[in-house]
Amino acid sequence: MTVAERQINILRDKLRHIDRQLAAATQNNSKLVGMLETAKAEILRLKGALEQEGQPPYSFGTVVQINPRKQPAAGSSGQAATEESVDIFNSGRKMRVGVSPLVNLNQLAVGQEVLLNEALLVVAGLGYERAGELVTLKEMLGKDRALVVGRADEERVVRLSGALQSVHLKVGDALSLDSRTGYALEKVPRAEVENLVLEEVPDITYQDIGGLGPQIEQIRDAVELPFLHPDLYREHGLKAPKGILLYGPPGCGKTLIAKAVANSLAARAAERAGNTDLKSYFLNIKGPELLDKYVGETERHIRLIFSRAREKASDGSPVVVFFDEMDSLFRTRGTGVSSDVETTIVPQLLSEIDGVERLDNVIVIGASNREDMIDPAILRPGRLDVKVKIQRPDAEAAADIFAKYITTDLPFHAQDLAEYGGDVQATVDAMVQRTVEAMYSTEKSNEYLEVTYANGDTEMLYFKDFNSGAVVQNVVDRAKKYAIKDLLTNNQKGLRIEHLLRAVVDEFREHEDMPNTTNPDDWARISGKKGERITYIRTIVQGKAGQEPGKSIETTANTGQYL
Image 1 (tube, one colour):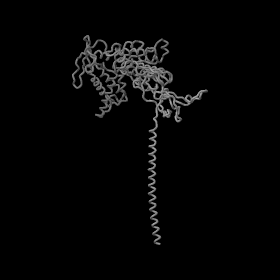
Image 2 (cartoon, rainbow, N blue to C red):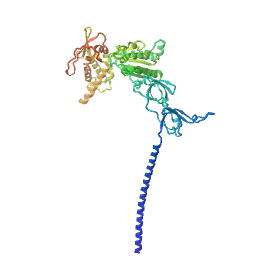
Image 3 (cartoon, rainbow, N blue to C red):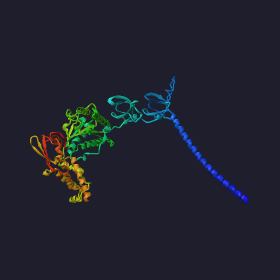
């Protein structure tokens, strides 16, 4: 029995040893299988790489024409004219190639790039070339061709790509041209063109403008009556004015009036047509922006401006073309010191205003503070018919302007409110009245300049003689800043009359040295003083921080402008 048990134990040990060997063999086998799989994958990768190295490269082509499948004509032979195919440009050659069954012919378009295999078979459709020569559209020739102008004013007929055929194109648009294939590929937005795009009118109304009641009424009679009652004008044989000139010192509201005119025209047009969606457009052109060092570029910009204006006005929408700083662009011909660009710019504007093409629903508004420098041909009746002088505000007008900026929704100091029984409106009225009285006072403290004329006469000018709507706004802003500083330093909240009076003094003191650098004649014209030639100017006010008053000077050169 003992021998038998010993043999059984020996057999069991052998079995356990065999199991361990089997487990080790299984593990080794799994590792070998993994290594074989890895080796197989690496072999396949290397094999694929070798195949790719031996494969010829793909080539690119540009689609010229798409030829769908056709039924063969009786008696004809050959598949080239009946099977699906694509005409392409490839390496400067035009050829007809086949299309892979995996490529949908309907998804290809002319001008598009395609991928060709070794047999020159179209195997994939790509996008459009994103680089090319920049050209300008001059004229459309049907739906798929156009006349463009390239470098050195070279004209060329080009085809339109499939993407461009679905885009609304206008004369003057910049296009990207693939000169190898003769295809215009895409419309290119250009900064100089986008700056001339008509923008919708800002929401500025006549009620937002203070102190210019008579001028606004004159402008409304000139602009709105012909637009609202065209039948009456035709009955009386009267034509609507083509343009308005707003002239006067800077900062007095010329630009605001132009924007309000466009806004009012839009409202009237929508009311008349019964269509609330009818828009008006306001094209704000700053004179210096149009000037270009290349001959003819400024004239091209002017043509583009009026072309866009006519396009927008063709659907009945009123369009206002506003030329700011008009004297910088359309000055009298022959007065140029270093150039004669005005000799061609002025005739271009004249031809646009009263040329062969009519300007229906387009009103031209010019603004300038040197109306004497604008070419007389522009100012004659029939071009800028209505001339409105925007004068510096008097005391009543200044109070109206102050009321636009000092409103009842502002925080006011408790002491000022208590002084007027807590009535906010009464407090506002008192603030405006006292500020205007301080601004328009002719006391000695408000003396500003003493001018001497060529005949020996002298005249004292006060701060009120240089006031404007922009100065009023700056005074109010300055007073609000003082109120904020008082709140932060003294914990005293609210706007006070003291802040406004202090702002008036500080605002005018900042300008005390300005006339010393100005030609008296130019300064007098800009500031609204007409008449005898000025030879001397003397500042009266005491300078800041104890500086001495300005000395009498005689200026002999035009060195700048003031106000």
